Image 1 (spheres, helix red, strand yellow):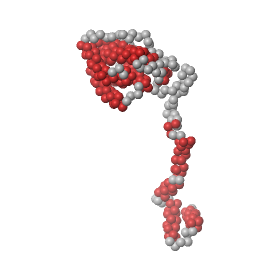
Image 2 (cartoon, rainbow, N blue to C red):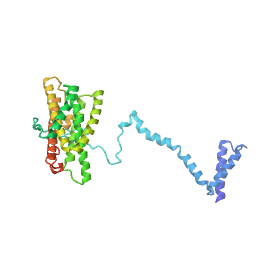
Image 3 (spheres, helix red, strand yellow):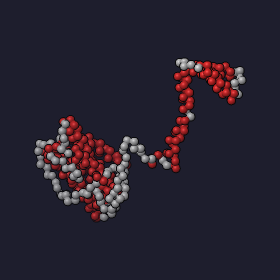
Image 4 (tube, rainbow, N blue to C red):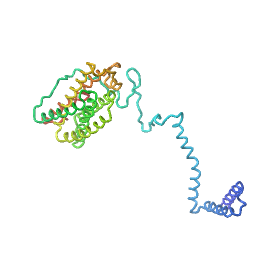
Length: 338
């Protein structure tokens, strides 16, 4: 068996050498003999057989790698299209659902779904005001009034920019409150009474206000810088405040929402008087609030003002619950109450 294998190796080597015209060379002949001995050693099952086999396998697999890479690259470069147009694989079972509008057109948004849309309740009382009754209420009320002074100085009657800045701040309390209630629920093994979801819904609603205002008012670089500074300070301040006194924190937000209602009312006055052009409503606002296709800026500001009035009521209600010595989970949460 060994003799036949050795003969086969020698014959293959001689054929290869004949093709290369090198087997007759006195210089090459010693190297050929060494090569034959190496192959016979591998056939005999020596310790070097594994390493030689591994080297041979690597040399055989080498040429196929560029071909595989070319096959992978060909779909990307075909027709000159970029990789961003390639649909992400649904290997994980996650894919974008095919959702249609009521008119049969494709749903264009990934940031919210039709189940998140609603028609705002326009019958809400916009004139409600919580009169300060105790020391904490007065602190919250005076603090919010002081915060309004730099806003009035910086933005004056530029209510579009003011609204954009307001929404970057207004979306923080709901997220902070919902997060802290979530952690409290985990620590104490208690239900939240639906308040986690209610506060997170408020934060999401305020964020959608911001997404709408960004479509209407393009922020300048210094306004973006101001947003970073204000949000960083306000988030940390409100986080500490909510840990120390949720009652005071919700009262502050209630008064902030009262100021928001006032600001949007003034915004509407400028639209009605012609100071601000009543431009068509952004597409995102039409779908989110289920507005008519021909809706205008006035319609958008009207529904946003109604949302702010609802947030005002929710936060004053939450503060009142704490004022009576109870926890939020003991009272029904106003879910889907924008």
